[in-house]
Image (cartoon, rainbow, N blue to C red; front, side):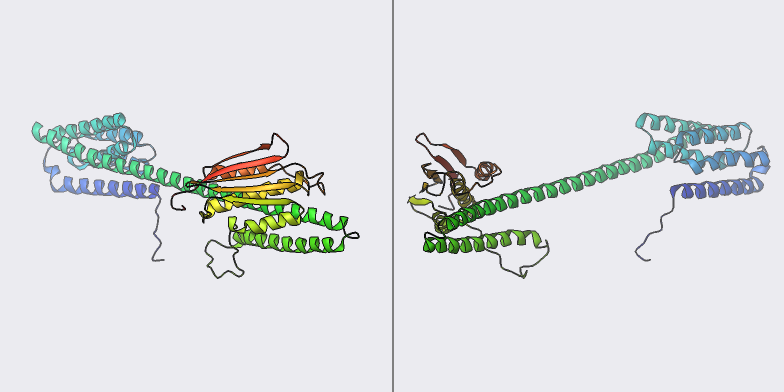
Length: 397
């Protein structure tokens, strides 16, 4: 209970204020009349005076809902009170508070009108109280100026709080949008990774299974080698799939002690394994490296590996198992240039493998992400080539 605050509705606060002010005004006016003003020529404080005091003060109970109406009713009651000849010094405070309610809730022009009404009421009360013009004018200006400064300060503070709340809400929405955008980007990245793993490994498995079935009776050693390759390819695919799916499984606050290891992100250091799997699928793959090989940034390294992997997968799918493929890598001072080209002479593919048409799109998206360029298309003398280039930062060199 100590940390909770009691919230009282504003209408209740205003009602209590109006009742208390009315009671204080009536009691004080009666006592002031009996103690002092009855000896002067003021009208006796009678039942009509009590009714007019209530008319001036009680409307304050709804001052937040209808500020201008409350000010006009209170001002009219005070003017009738003054015109009836009652002593004016006991009843000017309610219009002052009503004027404050208008100034704090209405635009500047309307607020200035309310201030003028309050100033006129106080000036009239001063004249009715038989004080000098200077004193009447001074108390009118001081009273009106005080509520003007206080009300405008309160209004400016409320406006700044509203702007701050709006900015906070906008910032929260922007943070939510950025978080959703990051989630979408991560899902797209994982989708590309899954596509590469599934497309490459399953394509190789399908070709090797077809080859094993084709030579199962005529060449048992070749069939056995194909089955061994199927087992190795399947295990590697499972490892990569497990590594990717584990990323989805780990909670944001989970520590590094999550059960199961994280497998390293593949890069060009595993190019030999990739080529061996392609050769096991029947391709004649030759690798040519020029320049001085060196470690690359993880993102660039993964990008190059996946593009080469996708290119070899497309050869397995479309060029046939007997195609001859050249994988050429050239390490320049600030770039990595690569080409995967086949001669198109592999005959018909060993199996009709489905494709979603996303391989080339994934290549372009990956390479574009790292500021590179890629071209893919038929070669003039037959076959197909994928040529890409990736910038290598100076730190990597």
